[in-house]
Image (cartoon, rainbow, N blue to C red):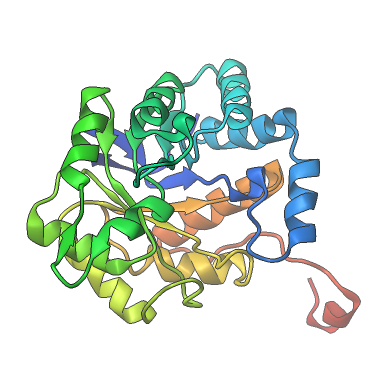
Length: 278
């Protein structure tokens, strides 16, 4: 088994490439029909097949929501490969009174722990509601981070707002890592890519970047070349894949780029490219 380069977050060894889950669970950021296709296509067995490729290459971490469907696929991949998967889960829960009882923070965090989470980073739908840019604080975070720690998980912030990183760092908030959107297209990013680049470079904790291919808007080699060459050695990249072949290609491209090699991956062939040879 080969080993992908690793970093350390909160005392835990993590691969610098992490398996994403949007292309397992139906979050295409493209269209409702594409979301429906993903949900219909991605059986537990197919998800397990993709995750097995990651595990076989030493990529033993996955990032996503607290999902029973996903958990069963993870367990199948673990059984097949004989290797455990580190779960970085991003739950959502009530942050104002009057929400559904099953979404109360205590119940959600108990469930997140039950699913085996090592890291618990409340989803951006939670985190970004807590960001108070006027007072430079993350409201109620001390309470939530304590609840996460009490359940023996490591806390962090999943965010679309770069201010979450700077405010957290400046206030010395109890976090071990951040999830931050970062891609060459600026897709879903709230400020320009060079600003986010600077925020990541100056972050006091390792950063987990997401959407490196801008939800399929960038070619894999283009998206990976940008992120791998502009983040620190302690930072990570999350990639979602639909098939085992896509997972293998993303891993090989990443290894080539990290080792400063021009990728030699097999290219698409079409009639219009016949004159280019190959």
